[in-house]
Image (cartoon, rainbow, N blue to C red; front, side, top):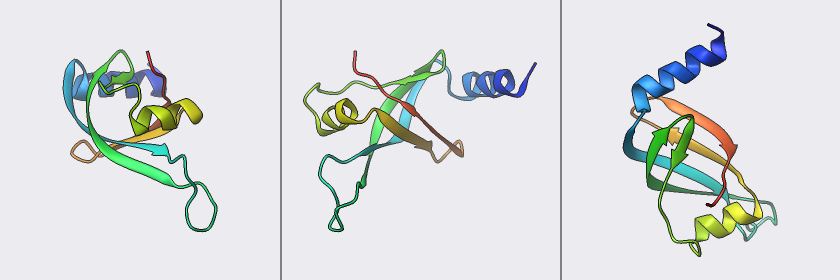
Length: 91
């Protein structure tokens, strides 16, 4: 088993098929005071299955508007000492 497969198995064992709180970070639509992009972080309840985190939210929420403009996101689970980045999508 290669490192990727080992990592995915570990994630599935620790997080699979259950929900929990994670920090979801997106890029804010409005720039910061210096005109540069700024992060926007919030706690969401997410469900992990088959290598993806799923969360329920309103299609018009700030996070979905931010994801529509820039789908690059980051997540953090403090209890599990886990951080990752990826691409989000609305379905």
